[in-house]
Length: 407
Image 1 (spheres, rainbow, N blue to C red):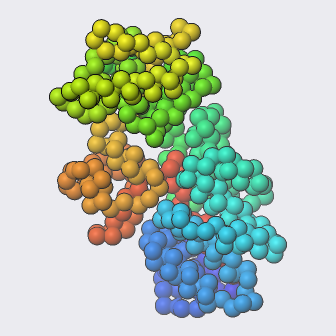
Image 2: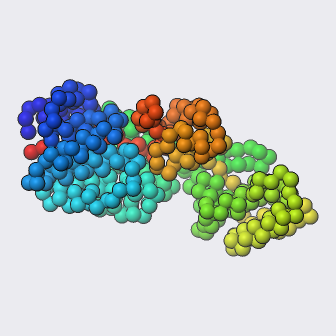
């Protein structure tokens, strides 16, 4: 490793991407290309970073297996930052095996962390937990330890284990302080702040609402009440869970009945909620009876749905209370967050088309959401794309200092 490459690696290790670029901007040898790719990734230019990393991997010879494996890991993290989750995971797994076999334990750990974070974004929590269980983070660089704890914290949050999440974030903060990387410290601070923000709203009778933090959401779900969960789209009672995410009509009916509980709901209101019909006719009423029958069969073990003179009423079993758990925000902003939560990067024109709104309206809503940290953007001008970050957005500081210690 020549002195210029070493100096560039040290600059990237402390988050000085511009300082690193000044040293290697005019070099095209594989180590310099890899360093430039990492610097561009730290600056948010992920497409350019991926191109440079691929050129670096091709430039290393067949005997430089370790350097090529490090490039694969770096490119995988760039793909994760771009939310490009459609590729095969075999190259990353093979790189992890190579790194472990050749004694590069820190980068092998990084590869496993990338795999776990990818599974979290895909919502495969059990597989992510299994991947994290294979990781031994003792004795690794502080930056890696911080990201490992951030990953564990996000898994805990998605599993509604607030105490475990807070403990993991405290360990992440200590590790980030030891690493002395400002971007990583900011990432941990943002993750800690996210835990104190409302995770949902409890809709109260009479039109009121109460914001709930994650601990309160977990307590509500274990309280024994019949919870119509508008966050995950389903009905929850004790240990029983009835998913309705793929049955929007049934969920709309369940929510309308739950919001009116203990009163009944007029048939016209139910038809408007479920079918959007302003002038119901006999076909709508017949369809309502069919859908109510389907919902009644689905939740039979949790509640009864009885007909009344003017409509239908929800009667929970075992004297349970009925609660509606709504997302922290509603309306157009909620629709945007829902679309962006798939992990893909969306353009404003595509979002406007999906929502049936003007592009200018979508842009204003995105700016408001970005100010509160609920969405973030990548790229600029016509190439600008929007996505919803997970609990920890994960900076790309790991792409180089440890990942490409070119021997």
